[in-house]
Amino acid sequence: MTIYFNGSFMPLEQAKVPVLDRGFIFGDGVYEVIPVYSRHAFRMREHLTRLQHSMDGIQLPNPHSMDAWVAILTELIARNAPEDQYLYLHITRGVAPRDHAFPKPPVAPTVFAMSNPLVHPPAALLHSGVACITATDNRWLRCDIKSIALLPNVLLRQSAVAAGCAEAILIRDDAFLTEGAASNIFVVKDGVLLAPPKDNLMLPGITYDVLLELAAANGIPHQVRRILKAELFAADELLLTSSTREVLAVTTLDGKTVGDGKPGAMFARLHELYQTFKREVMRK
Image (cartoon, rainbow, N blue to C red):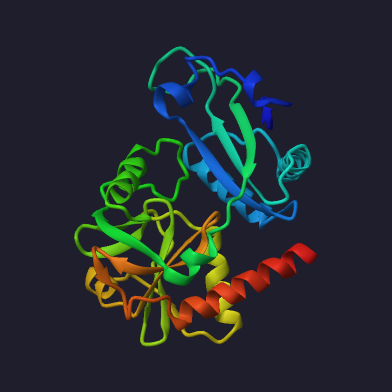
């Protein structure tokens, strides 16, 4: 595997991060994940725009322009073998003596990017859907920042794994849906696609954006609004989206069937539209 690390391409084994890196000490950094299909990065500029939002959120200057990032990541894709990949970008505030306050003067950020094979959801999973649990959203109030300090998400996702489930769906203040531990969640009721609003309590998903764009372009009724806990449990369908898992149907929630317990018509329509959209984008 070839990676990009602080200005150079190298084998993964050669990269070394000092123990005083603020990412290691404080989790002081941000990250981004970009899917790659047939060696074409999917919505790279939108992902890099989200990266900029995260960097702005922690007051970390971006070490590269948009065009420079595109050049680096395009080269990284070319240097790795898989046709379908996902890129992981990781930027910390850099190496400095341990102190909560930002280093003064600022130090050079640590910049890391790697490629891994992109494993698509198997056909059996698309046919059956996935099981999820609900959990209290006990994270901080800036979930719109894609922070590397992911311990709350790790613990929430692990609770799902321990229960034999694919994801933990998060409920804030015992009142309303926010997102999954590592995904966005859509509710379908009476033929209407419902999406939680993009605010500080959820990560603004790129796949989330695509699904809403596809709904608008294809006459699918949809609303973006606060979704109450009761509406989550009364859903006809639930959809889970992320950059690596794309679109999946949630067919079991807290051990109870969602709808008729099978992936529904809205899932089938949006999954097909998403796959068609991907192919069209890759041909451009």
